[in-house]
Image (tube, rainbow, N blue to C red):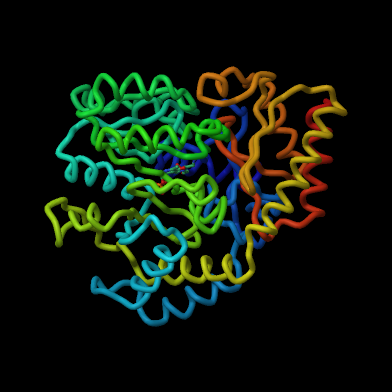
Length: 424
Ligand code: KE4
């Protein structure tokens, strides 16, 4: 029996579903997940010695690939000085200054230990700052496992059939209004009727948790206009897109200034991290300055700060986004050619280093269109790619990520594998 299967059997005895996060499960894929032993660059090596070209990238953080020298050395230096002090440190100031420099809409920022903590804190801050109760989110967007936001949620919640998680009291869920993404009229109608009750709108500007798709031209601008008109806060959840789609994330691409931004993943270099920040007049409501309480024993911890600072600095020094765009364009061109050659009319979406093949022939602009995809076709493709040594997310409701460690050879091998998977 493969070691991965033995480990999965052991894991299932002591960990729910054998995994510490549902997205890692291979439910409905007729096989156990593989267990990773090590990773370097764009490649994973499992406990049975098999190697994979990795497009999960630990769900986003590995933008430089796995174990980049700059991050490894930074963490080794930091850990020798202690792991956590519970006092302010220089690294936290450097991280905050770096984030504020790269994302101009962020004038002040508070570190957390996960993206979930960041969005939870941002929602509480929006309610505390406005004195209002309602939050608006979009179907299929995922903002972590916050009670208020586990309503029509994407990612693992969607994959495993709990978009509206049990355990969230209806009284709380009712304070979250869900709209379809990319529907301007729905936003305008809601705000016309209830705008003055709405504390904030939280959105993944380029949704990556129901597969990947893009905002229609003018849509994000509509969110900015309507929230400003009614005094609600616009919260860009850039946990996934932050520092990935550009140095300033999605908001730089579309030149939109949200009131608050949530971050995570890349800014921790693979260590536990999150952050929320934005307008100074809003952030000054956060304790100990203001009356919105928010805290964390390991918030801004020295190891995550060292890893994140090293990663961000390397991205900027090397202008990683040009490389990511070049690799992404090569991959897109190859995938479209493979679809044409195999006469498969599936929908492919990409922005920079984020991409997704949707197993549907209709355009994908929101959750409903993403859900028109054929799961059996996805499953066949996923298993064939895995067998050929290519690892993409084990769900159609996730995004694939390129890193600067991927090579043209990796991309070309991926296209060949995709063509085979689509043809057979
Ligand atoms: P974390 O709490 O997992 O650090 O971040 C939550 C989160 C918030 N906002 C967005 C836009 C996110 O994509 C996420 C987390 N993304 C998932 C992958 N789709 C994390 C993987 C997992 O749940 O294990």
